[in-house]
Amino acid sequence: MFILLLIIFVVIPVIEISLFIEIGSFIGSFNTILLIFTTALIGVYFVRQQGISTYYKLYNQIQNQEVPIQTMFEGLVILISGILLITPGFFTDALGFLGLIPLTRVIFIKIVANSILSRYGMKNQNPDDVSIEGDFEEINDDEDRIK
Image 1 (cartoon, rainbow, N blue to C red):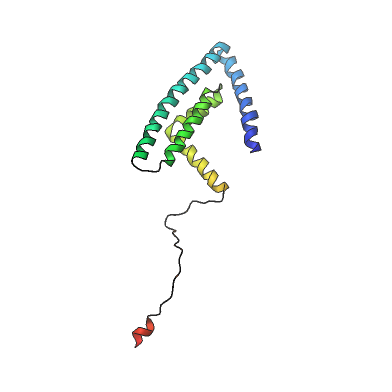
Image 2: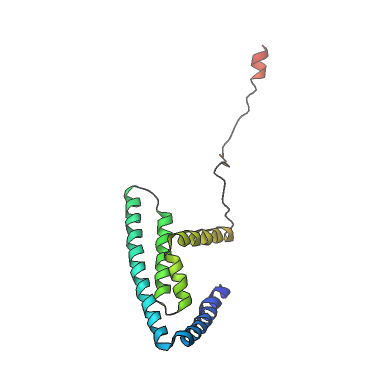
C-alpha cells in the first residue's frame, strides 16, 4: 500500500512536472496549457460516450438475467479513466485514454483481476477439474456373480 501511495503522490507528479517542462519548452507555455484543456475536453467527450455505451450494455445484460461482472469492471475502468483525463497532465491523460480503448481496457481488467486473485490465494481453476464432495459405499458385485 505504501508503494502505491508513493507512486500516486510522488512519482506521477514528478513525471507530470517533467513532461510540462519538456513540452512547454518545445511548443510554448500557452500551447501547453491549451493542449491540457483540449485533452481534458476530448477525454470528457469520450468518457461520456463510452459510459453511455457501457450503461446500455449493463442494462441489457440485467434484462437478460445475465451476470454483468465484466461490464461492471469496464464501467469502473471508464470512471477511473475519466478522473485521469480531467486531472491536468500528459501522463495521466495517456493512462486515461488507454482506459477508454476497449482492447486495453480488457487487458487492464485481466491484469488487475489476476493480481487480486493471486494476492488472496485464489488460483484460476480448470473447469475440467471438478470435485464433487460426498459419501460413498463400495459394493462388491463379484461375490454375486460367482454364485
